[in-house]
Length: 331
Image 1: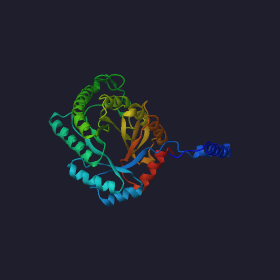
Image 2 (image 1 turned 180 degrees about the horizontal axis):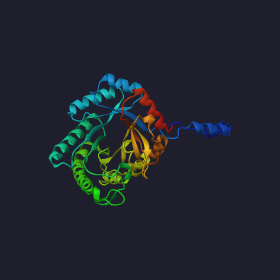
Image 3 (image 1 turned 45 degrees about the vertical axis):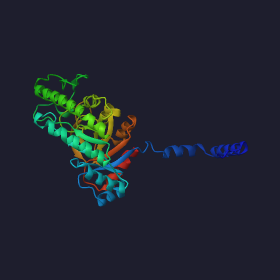
Image 4 (image 1 turned 90 degrees about the vertical axis):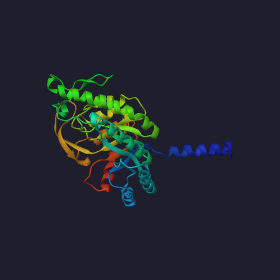
């Protein structure tokens, strides 16, 4: 090993000190101002439904994306491996498989849906993905509070719901029973899938969409964290639940359980309730009423590092890439 003499060491140190002393306070301030507020540890992706091709991946790469999430879950491993090869040829990653909706709260569909998720997990492993997005079930046709009025009281050990809003809950009795049935069925289903998830090295990432279940940040976080297992986590959609509560509250409650992000826009046109939700409708990401700077800070606060996949259409790939760049940078 080459050694450094004391004379050379002292000389180099003196030079470094001299160079440092030349920096004025103004120069130091300028350096601090240009330093990005957040580390570039969030990676841009798009959701794709079409068959992966060289043309598709070349286009996304040129637009600035690092990967994709794919909803082609019902494919054999050999086909998934071919898609992985195409992606890797363009230096892209298929980071997740979108299995989406299942019906674990419907006994007649339970077994088939369990098998379908197993298929998706095997496909994800072959794609080189590390998560499968799963929505466990849905409840319809029951009287529920308005989105912004949900205030759920539940047993933290069993996740069984006692009330879903302030005041008299008699009108919501059927919904509360359906919620509890859905929770029990979902817990059983996900627990039964953990062995294959561990075997294939693919996390089950639970997403909460407009399925009328786990409608507050605290309750959904309790559901995701209930399993206390490395192979079960949460997949948060930034925008999906804005009508219920501020996006930042979902991030804060889910915390380190978040392993993937979707992003879409939502515009509150009439704020209501005490949780920051309200009447609104879908809007483009850059036209949403969501405070993206605050959202980015909230993600940094929970130390999120990973993928952010666009789940909307209407702009070019290049424009979506630019929009995400600004959000990721905290601008």
